[in-house]
Length: 204
Image 1 (spheres, rainbow, N blue to C red):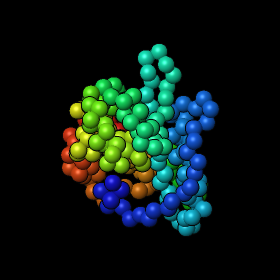
Image 2: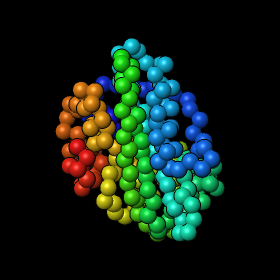
Image 3: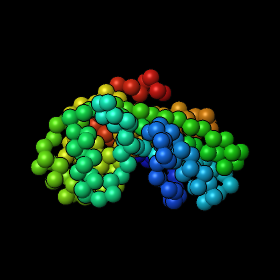
Image 4: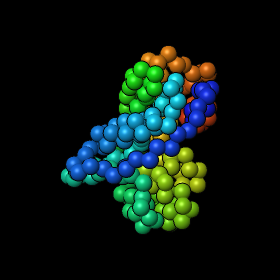
């Protein structure tokens, strides 16, 4: 997704503990992890550079219950439980961005939230999708772009956010560092994802 902006970049793999803290809400959780990731990656970067870190999580609030953070499933049974919990309901996907300038220590943070209404998929569809292995490294145990499972019928927010990188939020944050895309990024994003985005003009 970064390549859609025409930027040159390298990947730094920071190792951080993604366990939620006791009582931590979903927004606080993703913002803390994005900040922790960017700080961990800073020790691997050169003297001149801008580091982008992001963290995405799925949040659902059952009727009459407390908000639940759905991170990556620990096993296939856990993936099935998450998919059943999400089925036929609307949940929120939060992605936090932390962007750090190595040169002067400037840190810019942003947050994107998208409401995601899941379709009422069947038990057989859950079983087939879990058996594919695709849910195992996904927050909430699903990939919105998975053509075989197709978990969402429609959506009115940022599709790229649900995939894990809200490109318009990233663009407006990078402008604060004097960095702009080499392409018409909203257009490139919509073409690449096959999605007519109704929100990009309000963000950019």
